[in-house]
Image (cartoon, rainbow, N blue to C red; front, side, top):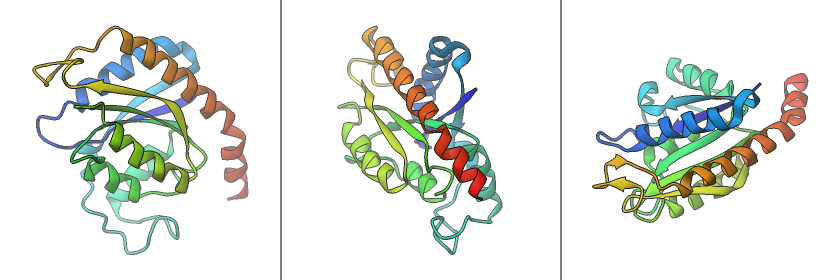
Length: 193
């Protein structure tokens, strides 16, 4: 069964990411049925300090206990959904930091984006898409852009419009198709190691 990690990118107090990630997990699991499982990976629970590994993950995997724990959980997934807000036209530092801790765990996997913000976090997602290629990730086309004005009550209580359900279903279908298609590449990499 394909395993998808839903990563909550913000660790800020009062964040909206938990509500969004829970909704994504419930609807994705319902839509996918027995094709996949969906696990929320909340960066707040990993308590990652600013990158403190002496060597970049591209060169050598980290060995700090928090790095190992993060690598094991993230690496066990076959694909990802990044749930991200947009801060100052970019992805939150907590998400960027978590991405930078790893390298091999990201490669040959598909990634999708659910953004929320004044304009659906489209600029934050663009930033993340640019990085995905360098990490050898397949970033898929459908993106869910949630508006704080239209999909939240008073910018805090998540109440998505009905059209977002259909958009999420499209995103999940595409993510699962790519995650399945990339499995032979992941298997070849495991065999070579």
